[in-house]
Image (tube, rainbow, N blue to C red):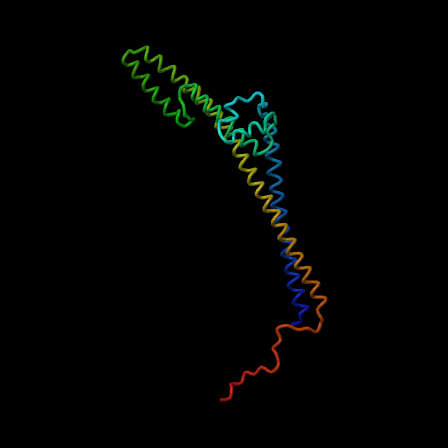
Length: 224
């Protein structure tokens, strides 16, 4: 086979692969851009604005290590996945925890409040059966407080879940964008190698052959 023909075959195949890789990169980058724009559109529609820095309490600024993001985004309208994560994890979560403490159920969540309400209802029924009206009234206040808190928790957890879901998709979008960049780089490298192959093909003498057995070889058995 002529060396030039072999070079052209490999270079053409490499260029075809480069095109396919570039198309894959384009598809991935397009999806990444969609994820970013979709997150921004949906978050902007909620019109959630971070509290101004001078309105943040000391607890809001220092509740957890990541709470400093509330200062970073102070006064900004939520538009990115990172902002959504910050608001969900360090603003909503703090106020839900505070609400639970103020209601007399520290550490309670929407899920745990279900069993708490059931226990209180049982205790109220038992108190009424004993004609303990005072005890029943006190327990009823706790039940009302637990019911109100559970509604608050449901709202908070729903919003947190939605915001963290958007954050998750934004992270996927960012990773997809990074992967797309790498793929574009691979496509460019493959294209460069293919071009080099074409160049080599046309600078190689037409008469040069490859995979040709060398003369002088013999398959005859050696003489003893």
